[in-house]
Length: 279
View 1 (cartoon, rainbow, N blue to C red):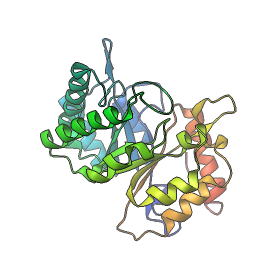
View 2: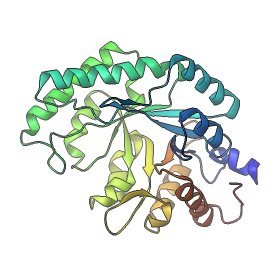
View 3: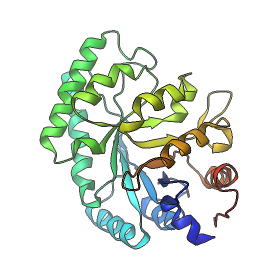
């Protein structure tokens, strides 16, 4: 039933806000928000501005997003730009990255995001993220200091996402700045990490969880049909034990209607077998 879907996050058995990305239908941000209103509780706004391409909303767009959120009962998580290098040894690149994040924070602050998702990218792909981890950590520390000093953002609303490297490298930064975590379970599986161990270590700080399927060839961000049996159930069981006031967001980080609808069916099958989702 539609009522069950819209109030899903307040269900005693599944106490979280279910979200997905702002790229489900092949259209711009605003049409996607209208489409998703009533289907999910939260929308991850995936924003970019790189190489002459940009989907940054105008101030008028942000005002409309606020109206949509109020009328549809939505919250937003804002994914800060991906092409940033806050730990770069190149001071110009590092400064540009800080400035880009601050511009997005200033632009989107009227929407009062539930969380800001931030990547601490490495100098290279893989683990370790840098040939000089101490320098990489120090430069990230400097960048985070600048971000928090120049913005009015609550540190607990900044969620550092688990990427392709050992997240223990970022642990000191997360704890020293009292930041939150975006535990990307799809990434953990893709890179052979122990999901249960990461939940044990980071659950209390994980304001946002990303879930998505991973194919045998390494393709990720596909339907939850390709997320291992038991993973969703373990996460839901941990979330179910939280007090009502401790709200978390679980984002199906997928792109496209087919994967979205199939993922909703997977949740129905695994967690809501006695209810029906209205898609």
